[in-house]
Image (cartoon, rainbow, N blue to C red; front, top):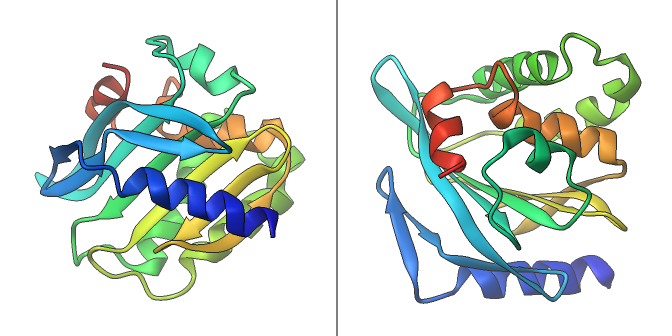
Length: 184
């Protein structure tokens, strides 16, 4: 029941009228997470070989421009990622995610290896253009992972959250320009 309520709050935030267009995707300017109003902190696209792969938005209660602070903050926040390219496959997403976790943890994935496998399992099904993923962190529940509005995984622990947000915000992010856009 708690997950259903969380999902309803998240979805209500995504139905907001005010939106920001990025990479051909409309991202809501607000998201409600666990009854807390989150604002679109920054948004951008993951570009590879001059093509947009996905659009992303970072949602937080308060604006913070320091990536390390965001990574380490133990408060509700979320990421919305929408696939914009038909070139993304499950295999490519899995490979990129594994590389992202290695970069975010400086190669020390062992303490959260089980959590990483749980997270990556969400990408093992078919991935299509316009698929939408939300990664919602709340200290009590951990990281809730949604695909197209359906809860796919629940992963406990701040260390996993730090590594997950670090994929895009660490010193060696998935895309440097996207990191800059998320921090604006």
